[in-house]
Image (cartoon, rainbow, N blue to C red):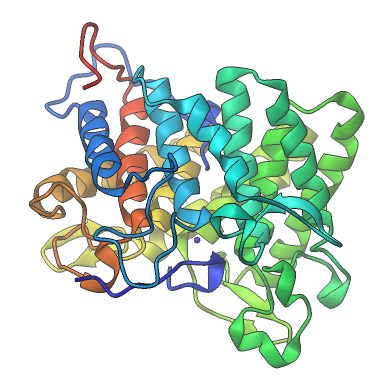
Length: 400
């Protein structure tokens, strides 16, 4: 049985999501013995069957654990919406619009921050700035696919909410959690300014910039540039990979997670395209190479492997590499290493019931394998590679 636990933002041992423009089709005549879209949908149906609940949401764990609420925390739901968005693009009927609408089951309106999304369903729990940005990323993708005006309105509210998490402590930047702003005595408990909150805010803002009303563009771009510069100046290490956070006590926390560098790669490339300032792209490329060199290495009998824990983090880095390929072709090799890992994981990294281990090499981590986030990461990975390879659901293929 799994031990119940929750992920909440960047301080978990861990981090949707993927705007479609980052995906490129495979080259003409490409052949493969793997149909990634089929594997993605198969995994989704397994998760839907085992984790789905009466609210149209998902449970936090399977099997459900003592202390679990009626539905998962927002972060794993974010992961599922990212995966569902990909499946919808692949041609599967996955109730995409209704699932996006169920984000509102996490909505809350708490002074002084105003409208935002809480970590728990029903508007309960703390409100995290990285969580809200990831919702925003998914709403941008939903708008690009479905074109509903209300998604833009919700994005505008997220921009306002993000601004309430920014102050001049340490020269700028967003805090992690609305309820933990500038509490030096609680630095070890999450009062910090992290790469995830600031990086995912940029990812969201620069996606929203492309579709927001013209009256908002200057403000949205200015905020993204400001947050980029703060992270670049404050959290970039000497090896060009990003540190996790700066605590309210002023201490830098040196753990490095793949998704933090991913967000800065995305932001750098997009800022270069929007502003015409090439240094942003150069910085993105430098971090892309540095992150591959830092995170990918031989592990056990795997010649080259991304980290064997926290797969959601790794998938975000793959999103960044795919988006960067047109400007940095070396990223194709980085993605192919991941594809090789994913092929092996399909055989060795899954349980007999079709769910995935956290460790894709096949080593069970009972405490974490049951988490919805681990399954969302697997579906996101499979469906992302399906889109990258130019796949689509086969004509006449059933959605059952």
